[in-house]
Amino acid sequence: MLDFFSCKWRDFKEYTSHLPIVIFYMYLWKNNRALLFKTTFVSYLLPLLLEISPWFLSPRKAGSILRLHRIKLTHNMTTKKPFSPERTFEYFYLTIIHAFIYCLVVHLRSRVILEHRLVIRRLVGERLLYSELGFIPEDDVQSPEVESKISNNIADTLHFFNFTLPDVFSTSYTLYYESSLLYSKKHRIDRLMFLQPLIIISFNKIFEEARYHLLERKQKDVEDEYATKRSKFLSDCLHGMTEMQLNNLQVHQLSMLDSMIDEELSGTASISSLLLRTLDSVSSRNLFEFVLEIYLVSIVMERQNFSHQQYRKLQETIDRVKNTISKLWEHYTFFFDVLNGQKKVR
Image 1 (cartoon, rainbow, N blue to C red):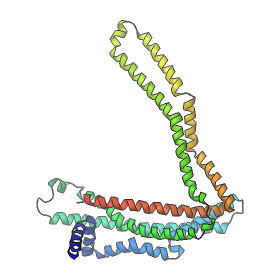
Image 2: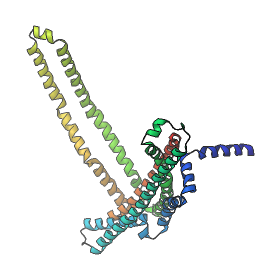
Image 3: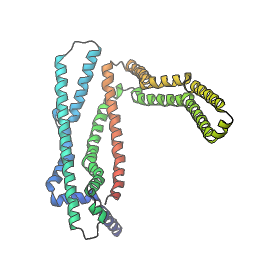
């Protein structure tokens, strides 16, 4: 049994030692530990520190407070309450603080990305200079894009380990926090608040299917039929031009063409085409979604005795939980894409 696990462990070490991401981090450990520690700090420690920091240092906490202020300002405006300079000023400087913290984090991450690209450039140069003669194909050596190709191939992997994986941890914490907050308000949650997006999506799907089968498909069939007739007419004219001219059939053919034109005009520019165009215009304005949404919201507000402000606060918490789950799922799928992509990097 020990031999079996020992063998598996050796195979695992052999496999991972040849992964480009492992080679890259081992290179950092040997040649640029300062950048390795900076990467660890910016990618893993900084998000954790920001999460446990006061609101003015945490993008998530500042963003949550900012959303509440926005809801209050919008509610005051819709209920015709007097303009509040103090609350507006709070919203103003909160936005600036939130933007600065967010841009600071992005700036630090962008600097780390740039330093990684420069290290990859040096690593590629080192491998080229110390490689055996003939080991690298002459075409690759002469190509000015060799560094760019390798850098782009490993970019997704670096992005995953430096940003996506840390984001998984912070997103998981956010999901725990938001879910706990939502659970504390479970007695006020109406099932329609969760079902509302599903109901609207289902309605849109039914509407699109009905629109396609009742109008668009028939319209497309008519257009295809006339396109076939036009093509056949031109083909007959080209192949039988000499015979038509010898028998003076030009007037007859033009009469047939005029009939086809009139028929196509009445078919493609009919009332059904006007109705289809009108439905497309109405659909682009999200009319049905808006009407259905306000109807569902009014039901929830009546059931739970909510004001619109209370409803918006709770609905935004639900939306954040759903968006966080969706974000985690995207990270999960991206992980397997990166794992498969490692096999293509040389």
